[in-house]
Amino acid sequence: MEQIQQFLPFILMFVVIYFFMIRPQQKKAKNERQFESELKAGDRIVTKSGIHGKIAELAETTVVIETMSGKLKMERSAISMELSAALNKKA
Image (cartoon, rainbow, N blue to C red):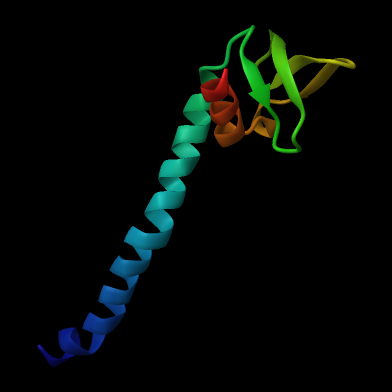
């Protein structure tokens, strides 16, 4: 019984860290993967570096976007879920 009482603060700290740090990060990563998989041609997006464009072509891991200055090929992971959602709410 004493051994459990000695480890109880450590167990409680782990539970708190899990629910306030680890779990929200896992949830955000899952939402970003879902967002990347739901992209389709014609979607207006913003990249994490701030480039605005419209999706022209999709491949498994890459995307070609049309910008005002031409076409760019980049990784799907470079598209910002938050910035793209904000852009599409305005329009």
